[in-house]
Length: 476
Image (tube, rainbow, N blue to C red; front, top):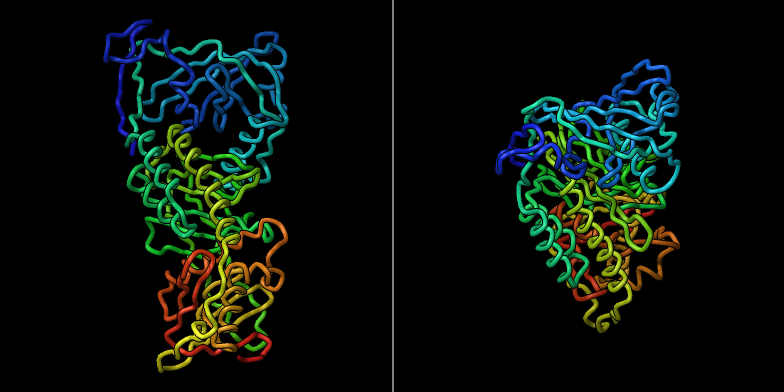
């Protein structure tokens, strides 16, 4: 966690090493105090001199001279500000209780654009934690010029949060290793290892977006009792990370008023044959996160997923974390898209026919795969494994292995069978869906695995004979 260094400022000057002179306070230097660990107080005055005070959820830092406040209701504060174009804002440091007063001049209200979208997304993220989704509706982003910043008491303490590590150097190190990844399968582990080793982040989940079904699925995680690879989450139930994906902006909350819970919906399956639906893959995540930062992964104008980092400490992530992760997530998203394209375009001729016949599996009870074509769900020996395109891929290659004794397959073949696998026409993400299946099988640790032979060519490895059962009653 960041280390707290408390310094003191007196009047308009301070001795070296004692703090920041009031005259040198900048909006950039105090931006972490704007996040709303203690709700900011807005004071306005009517044209005839009657004051009005109300609390805000947070203040949005725009740049070194401007902030944005939410316009949700036409109340006394907004009426006063439109009349006088002046307001005063008091913010408190949650670490020391020191207070700052910002004198503001109202400039305009924006109803579209990056500031509005970012503020709307953050408001929605806060609403997701407080159960106020239907009440918190942003009508506009009010832009203010900051005319002055002042300490409210002489000798007040100013706190500086020293980074828990050198974030710039850490981001540079992780970036260098991501750039060296030549295979799609390397990216998730390199990213997770880099977060822990170089950025001192101990809990993270890499989510990928299934745009067709408006859901997220976990490709990698770290710091949890269960990795949860293959766990799925409806975008509408994904809270902070869901909002970050929908709006395409970073969201950071470090003062959660109550525990955030993912929507945990059991897999509902119509099983006319009486098969129980079973439990889904356990979602990774902290039981009581106090800080979360959700960063969308965007590449070539599209959001392809998100990285969620979290901590059980308040105010764990700051603006510098957001800046560092923004750079890394942009690179990670581009690498995911580029490497999976290279994987699909790779020349992958099939092995010679005599080499493609699999060796007989070891003796033992057959491994039973049951498949539900409706949503691509696969059960292995009665236990839920995976669903969707990844499940359809497993069913196809298992069927080829059983019918033709053929265990190898190529990504090109899967692409040609795209419609049968349920792949959408646009942004099918076949490469990462195959990677998800491979990682899910490895996490499961059973006798059925996928091994990569070379770029674009893989092999299904099974220690037991396969018995395939379709949900329509047809067995293989």
